[in-house]
Each structure stands twice: as structure tokens, then as C-alpha cells.
Image (cartoon, rainbow, N blue to C red; front, side):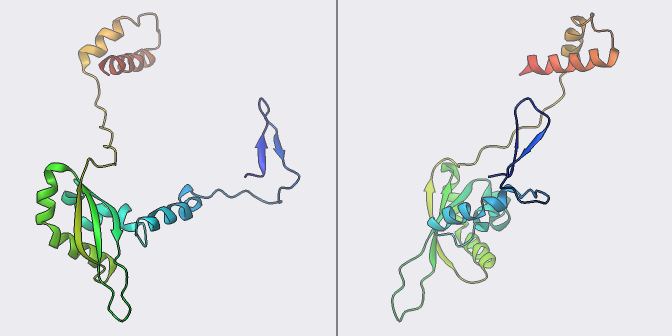
Length: 176
């Protein structure tokens, strides 16, 4: 909860009587939500979220483009026995499952190198669409013919630069 509130339709700032004197410091959202994310990742068996957030660096761009880590399943420890390595469960796009299965030794080496010890001993694949969204495509400039057609309808605009900008905007909107 913040110590300052802005009143509607007012330019003055209201300061709560319980507010502490001094400057207000803004914190990044990642810092504020760090504990929330850590708990969510811990429920999936991840000791740290870096395996998920840095998956592209760990697995490599070719593998990461078609897979993502779901969870790590740790076997129950047996008293007097050394800890068995975990199973990394990956969500994989259907057609690439066979390729990723063939690359499982490479993936295991990269994951264990990231952890610094042999934490993961096997992979389990779950075929499903990846949960991450595709990155938005970069927009391209509209073609000159479309811009010229829109510019003809803007004869009432006197400013040449404004007319050109509105023509580009109109052509882009019509394209989409």
C-alpha cells in the first residue's frame, strides 16, 4: 500500500497521516513478486526459477524453441542410500518430441552443467503445445501505393508532414 494517494481531478497530492517522511522509492515488480514466483516454482520441484527463465541459454536455441521445462520430480530419499538424480519433465511440441528424445543426453549434460552437479538423471517428455506466446512480428512499413491512396483523401490537412504521417497511419490500419 502506498503512502500517497492522488485525488481525482486534482493536481495536489494527499499524504496519508501515517506516511513516513522521506522520499518514496520504487521497486521493480520482479523484486516485489520474487517470493510469489519462488513458491510457485518450488511446488513444481524447481529449487530456483533460473532453469525456466534461462531455458534458452541452458538448452540452446534449437531445443528451447520447441520445448520448455514443466517440473523436476525428485525421488524420495532412502535412508542410508545416496540421493537418486531427478527427472526433468519437459513439455515438447508434438513433431519435435522424437528429435528432443534423441538429444536427451546433450540436454542432460547442459542442465547438469548449469546446476554444477548431476542433479537430473533422465528426461520425461509431455507432448503438448508450448505455453509461451509467440513473439509479436515486427511491423513493416505500408506500401507506397496504399499511402498515396490515403493521402488523396487528406487534402483538408494543410501541414505536409502531418498529412504524410496520417497517410502512413491510415495505410497501416487498412492493411491490418
